[in-house]
Amino acid sequence: MTLSRRRFLCGAGRLIGGYALADVLHAASARTMPMRMAMPTLAPPKVPLVNPATLARFVDPLPVPPIARPSGQRTHPAYPGRSLPYYRMEMRAFSARVHRDVPPTPMWGYDGRSPGPTFETVRGEPLLIEWVNALPTKHFLPIDYNIHGAERTKPAVRTVTHVHGARVPAGSDGWPEDWFAPGHSALLHYPGVQDAASLWYHDHAMGITRLNIYAGLFGAFNVRDEDEQSLGLPSGDCDLPLILCDRLIAQDGQLYYPVSDDPSAPWVPECRGNSVLCNGKLYPYFDVEPRRYRLRLINVANTRFFDLSLSQGHVFQQIGSDQGLLAAPLQRLRIELYPAERADVVVDFTGMAGQTVHLHQQSEAILEFRVRDRGRPDPSVLPATLRPVPRIDPATAVRHRVLTVGEQDDASGNPMMMTLDGRMWSDPVTEKPKQNTIETWSFVNVTGDAHPIHLHLVRFQIIDRRPFDLFAWNASRVVKYIGPAQLPPPHEAGWKDTVRADPGMVTRIAMRFEGEPGRYVWHCHYLEHEDNEMMRPYQLLPA
Ligand code: C2O
Ligand code: CU
Ligand code: CU
Image (cartoon, rainbow, N blue to C red):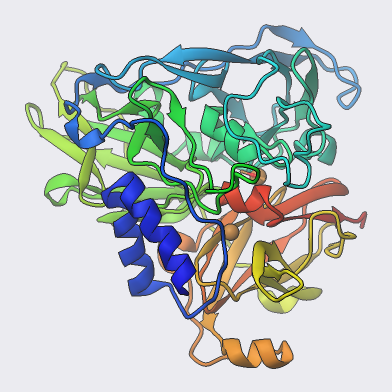
């Protein structure tokens, strides 16, 4: 970590208070190594921001996003002779209060709300969604026109929706360049050929994903199946998404997105807020009954990781990760989630009527559960085992790819941006797995930070993380291990679609490339990185 990098982080610390400092400390303690980075410095905000420390706690109820409802049935050429549920989902501008004492915040959202409605889907039951761009034609957040795909020649407002974690044909996956402008729409189909999991949907437009998601374009997308249904886990109004993100909010209610000190190139490599929104509210409370609840924790933040815990030593029973159920519930005091990661947890309030429990992000209480008895029995159970997770044997892989998570230098050797495998988005496709084959991918992280790496289409397993010699890598591009391999802890031993690639480590994953041939993407899920070249296409070849 060089001085310029430190300056950037310290600047952020001044801007946004205690969180950034905590991040610096976290990064400095665990996951850093010497690294030179000449990234843009953050400009101080020109408008006064809400200081969340001054806000009243727990005065707004936690919003629970409504369930999306189909507006009818339709046929689709991919499903001959069938009639499928058809959803029409409009993206619209709207204003909402993030807190009782903050003026309304203009945002963009699916169905004019953020988080958008929750999709309830079932394995084996395909559906159609028409994503409609009904947004204004002018963007309200700072576009950087130097970024590939965000040039002034493009319409400023453009969207394309991706269902994160969904196994869908390439044409329905939300290819970043398949965006459409206001007044246009895209009809995509979702075959539902995957196990129960907590997925989420969000915008993926080339070069401005970070701004569109920051504006509010995200929501939950549940996949259910009979196997999970038969377990008797908490359901109905005791099963809900808890969608977390951080924001900076100006005192007039506007969302503030940080910019660099160069007005002609406003992109910043990280965006961290000082306020944590739970389902769109700041410090909400949630009335619960003395029974079990299933919470689907989803990190939709641009760059922040969450370090979640419950007050007074209450525990989470983690039952699932990104791509569905773990083999067995895991008792956890803390849950760390990087951007786009999910944790499905059961929290048991049985016998706690009259008490309150807090959800903490690091040391701060961000949500208050108030336990009130309404006399309903709790029919739910938490079984000892959930679903087998057969391990993929790396020895069965037909191909082992070694891919850097790194930086691109300019002509004089200054790192200008972060890249994958040293390539740009527009470089020719290099990852061309064959349908139904198993591969391992090794992410060699040569930067000073962790990056959450996500592959579209597939679910994968983490094989291990292992420290390597950066100097040997830089000198000769060979991986020389300098420590033992670390197996994933139990909560990372289930099915994943996003993995934290730690600095100084080679992170190995294994997956079978099930799905339809076509073009997909893999990328860092720090949205600022993804928008600025830390995203690559891959091509799934037919078997
Ligand atoms: Cu959350 Cu490319 O996706
Ligand atoms: Cu995705
Ligand atoms: Cu990254």
